[in-house]
Length: 438
Image 1 (spheres, one colour):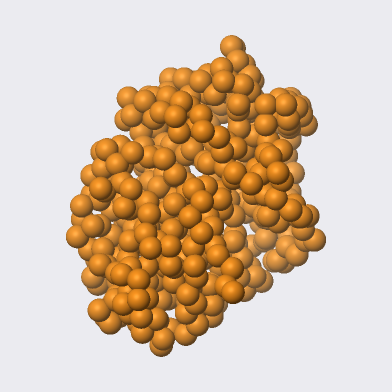
Image 2: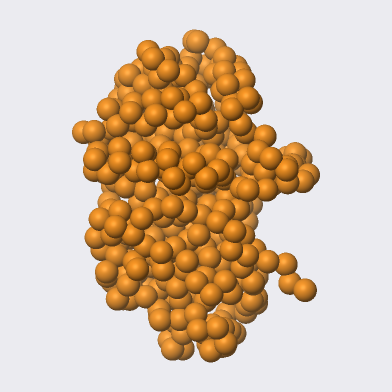
């Protein structure tokens, strides 16, 4: 019996039956067979989306993890071509010793190249390099009618734009051509500054974001009053000194799924306060490995199990610059007033570099990502309160992390959804897409 698949958040509970594809040459037939058998399907990579965007409407997905071969790598130009199931971790293992790095990376390296395109992932350097899709030179896509189409900004550009951030709906990405960035060392020159309020964060961000390749902040969501929004601001740049080694560290693991969430109203104040005070009041500089800087949670396998059997939801929004400070203060105050909070609270500035994707998430402003143990009150009380704040501030939510967004909000946030729907492969549909365009 084949094990079923879920999303990383494990909510909502729609077990997905995987149907594996192993070779590029078989992809068209595998897609056609699934469409004939079930009516529709959806490509599924590593399942690191948090909500239902990686769920097929039929709950039968085309698992692409075995399309994991490198096709070519030009060590002089830093251009790599690989199958869509190759993960960012596999890319780094190959290219770092040769002096190259990913141009953009999210907070986990266990994402496939196809998934990185489908969700147009972004990272700590959005203000410098934009989204992942900006660095994709081309890709080949297979559609259910048997067509294999090469897409780039110059060739089939409309399908290229619909696929970047298009949630896997326009076809199955077969292979990807990606431009890397050069590095002299795999080390990161990092700086950590503790700040006492949201106002202090904005001052730090205004002063240091433009001077650094990477910047991000952790926020303590449990405090109120003048300390609302306190946290830890981190910046980093690729170091000029050090070797080009791939980090191979023994990982910790959460061995089983907790019967209830270990992240709760009792543990959160201790976790948040402990992490805040772990960092000294004075700025700290250090040279560290790239893995703890970019991927701190990847060092704990199955960390999502700590949220218990019910799973968790992430709420990620971006607020335009002119309303960012007031809306963020309102969001954080709303969280603190409930006593629920979020330990994994990440805040970062998004720049004004436009993505080629039609429905890509980032916009110039401030992004906030929050994780909450699943409970009935999230969708009935807390998230609607957040949605009102985001809506009135002119912001939007991230489809790759969503399990609750209303269709009305999605269609308002992403007016180009109609263009994506027009180019959607008729054999591909997700539970998310069914939910938001109905």
